[in-house]
Amino acid sequence: MLSHLVDEAAKKIQNVPFLVNMVSKRVRQLTAGHRPMIETTPKMGFADIALQEIIDGKLSYELKPVVEEKE
Image (tube, rainbow, N blue to C red; front, side, top):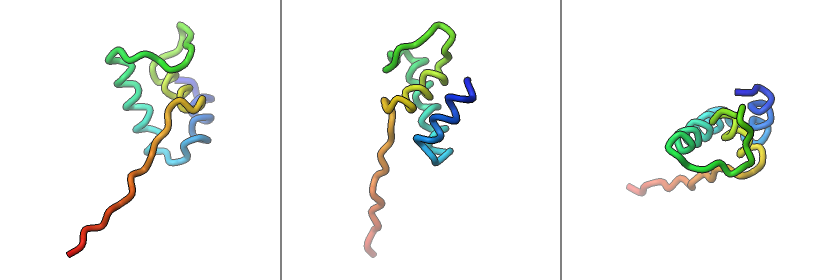
């Protein structure tokens, strides 16, 4: 994993646990055979691909609103 990709992705997703979870989930998808959403090079690992997808705006997240239960 290239450190400059981590730094750039962290600028897009400031919450580190979200970033780690996004990369982890995307790596699992790529390992399972999903196709990359970016142009890749032979030296890129799955984590590098996931980070570059985040940097390029191909991956993002959406928070669900919290619904409080009434008693």
